[in-house]
Length: 619
Image (cartoon, rainbow, N blue to C red; front, side, top):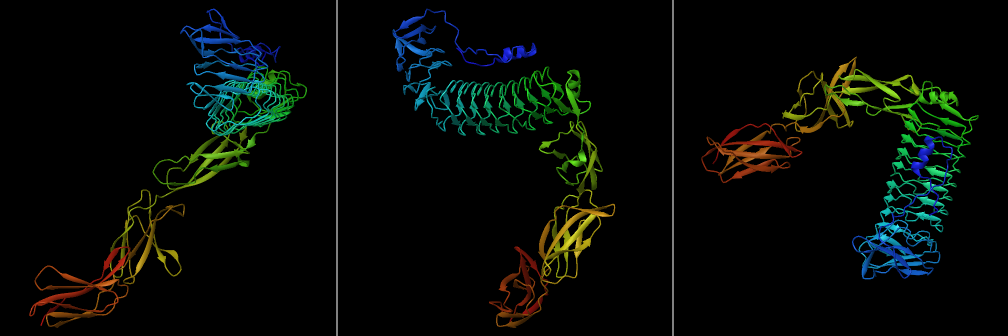
């Protein structure tokens, strides 16, 4: 094998040993350990017999354009194709795999540069093929994309791009990964030397190590916002990579993640990143300046090694760990570390003889500082609102960049938050918030008359009293009509009979001459009772004739009657535009008690007016 990669373990060993030989060329050997069984031949195939009595193809040695893997050899089922079994077959364009094969090792068809089609028997239970591409059975994973194919259309069923799936494809120039894909395997596009652009959709949450390593002509990459870690060597030796966008979802940049990206002139590390791995930007020889965000706490060894154009790097106080020889191979005469007094970065620069410039800490008062909540309901417990502080796009962290203290934060009134800068930030800023009485509950009209409405409610903890409002239908505004003490009833008097009224209420407490009131107020709609009906009742033959004057606001009238001395009233409902009624079928000579009552209905509630009872002897 001749694949050019940097071995993680070897690179780390060299980093710790002084990096005298970095970068170096090594080999990742994915070949399977040789079997103890005897290697046998079958035509152009070499094979071994496995412990279970099935056959594994270990080598194919023909220059034919097509090859069909046999399903059996000497009566034994062929179940496996070993890594690099079909190796460097430069004339090979097509491979056919029988239904018996259940295991195809990594790089089984290594360096078959003209391979255009891999075809799988439809009855194979492990693998399938479509348009010459090898998939798992349900086509949720691309297993091998033939190295001679130039056109790529990934079906929507694919969720995973498998390990080494597109590796060493020299024909591939661009690829669009669909939203169905969630995972890109290790070395998936390794050494796709002519791949120029790739868009990784937000659906992708994992990119394996070395996934794009050795894609020398890859110029720009958009990384999905679903990625939380850029793993080891993912974009190593992408020499032409000039533009890369790291989303705010990324928290770690792995070892040698962008090693050898010599065309990168700048890179923005988002505020989400907390650690930068060993050799992460080593040999990024065109980068001139870098700003480490306040979120980063550790920078790995040789992270910026051999960044020969690097002249300025800003390291915040949040960085508490800086590895050895971070800047080895950089231009020590021109490199300046911008840092804060007393920081780990200042100490590192002094100990390693690197020029540094002390930065002035920023004043908290000059930043955007907002309380996440400014109004609280009183509960008798202390309130501790948090704050959000922005320094550009960076969100400061409590405990690292600032501390909070509170005053008057328990009782109704105005409380304060004092923000005190820390680390890269100095000074203080004071914010205020209010604690107000809770909203009033149980608000209702307890009783009504023709001229008054008695309101009642549940008392509110901590309140000093209550403010009652009445809605003015002419001005369409609420008008304060009463400010009570700590009671739970109030009677509104001198009202007009048979009239609808709306009321609202707030709890309040006066602190320092200022009323603090509930945030919201409940409202009710009620009505006074209609006035007493003035009526006449005249005896007639087996009947009583009623007449009355109209009552303002009445919805209807009810005529009541009963034989004097009995307990049960009988009634007749009469519309509000009627002012007379005759009750017939009564008993001659009997004395009846009679009355007429006005009724007003508002929101399905009946308000009954007062009434007088009269006696009439029926003729």
